[in-house]
Amino acid sequence: VKFLWAIAGLFFLVPFGAGAQQSSSLELSMTYPKVHRRIGFQYDGQLSKSPDLKSTLYYSVETRIYAQQLSHAMMGDKLIGSFTLPDSAQAFALVFKDEETTDKNNGRGYVYNVYTADNLPSLGTYASEAVFYGNMASLFGITRNFDTSVTLYEKEFAQHPDQKDIYRNEYLTAGRYSKDRITVLGGIKSKWEQMISRRAPEDSLIKVYSILSNFDRPNAEAYKDSVLALYPHGLLSARDKVGGVFKKTSADSMVDAYNELMAEYKDQKPEDIL
Image (cartoon, rainbow, N blue to C red; front, side, top):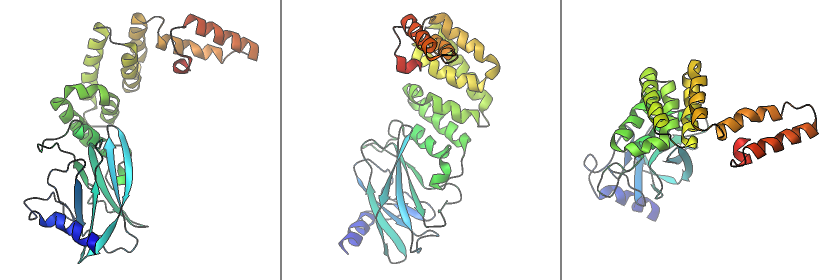
């Protein structure tokens, strides 16, 4: 009983429609969800009366997603519960499912952004939200939509350009399957040329090269040559040669080839090469 009234009290602080973020069948007690604050929810969707219903919180930290099983109870004709987002959370989703069905909310799921104390979108919230619409979308009851992911990444980058370095690979991957594939590729190619001209660190170039070589396979060798021209004895060069080690026909010759490779690339870590 104390649990029910404690959760219900979160909603009585402000009237619905003015102070609660809403969807057709799920209401939150905060218009601007924040970390380290108790957030109540009321759910009266298609599965609310299922005896086997499970409610789960999924929250994202950059490109990683974590899960937390929630407790809930019936109050009247609604299921109610609460949760607290950890300080690291940047976006989150609530999922309601039983043994057979997930409430998909018409393919949209129940996905939310995280806000600052001033009710502004928190750093990384749009880019982190984009992860929910990618390859794991079905887990959250969402119809996979790479166009939505690209839009969210670009919204994040417009507000926080420094976030491009964190989410570049994910942005490119989403762009590869979106309707804006050509536009996304063109933008990354331009960025690539800038990175080459200013001699960006090799590890940064390799990350972008790995994606571009999949996006633009006819020019994959040209991208590789650009990196090798800047770093002729770098990590990419070492990886190019490591294949020869495993082509040796005896264990002794393989060991010798490996030692020669490590001697030639003594500035590189063996675990990075292999």
